[in-house]
Image 1 (cartoon, rainbow, N blue to C red):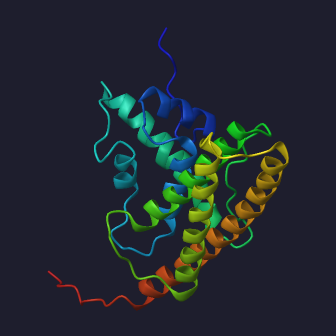
Image 2: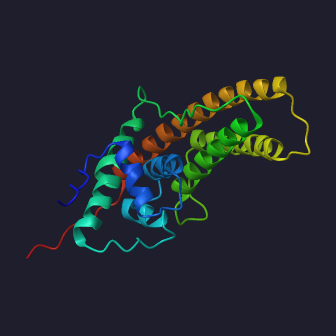
Length: 216
């Protein structure tokens, strides 16, 4: 008996399983923020399918059948992508992954790596294939704060993974507390970037020039 296909409104766990099946090199937590950044971007060249292709370096994996391709694309776009669009509302902020990690050097390294990848994913999704995009002032400020947070988190990851650098249990516990605060700030700034870009896209669409159609 054939395994039933994953429905288009796939849950996060079903999407995660599909990504693992097709050996997606981007971890699920980063896929979420890549999608979120691309949903938010004011770049008119943004495309959900291009973002999906980008998870595999620009070319979708070999599915073996059209049904398998439809299953993955449907789960990613109709499921995950559509769920993430609700975070464009002010009262529905996005939440970063909350992994359960041990109070240890390894646990701190795991958390710092996840946070760094999530921030990288958001920026990757926001810019897409563009090297530069026009951002409204609040989004520009938010992106600057996220860049500073990314540098701090990368520094934490370097220390946590360097066995030559001393780190007592108390140090690790304190740094984990600081990571929770950095997470809160990152979520706030990401939400402000999303809201600011949404307003900018709306203004662009309102002011787009129109040409009188030729009637036949």
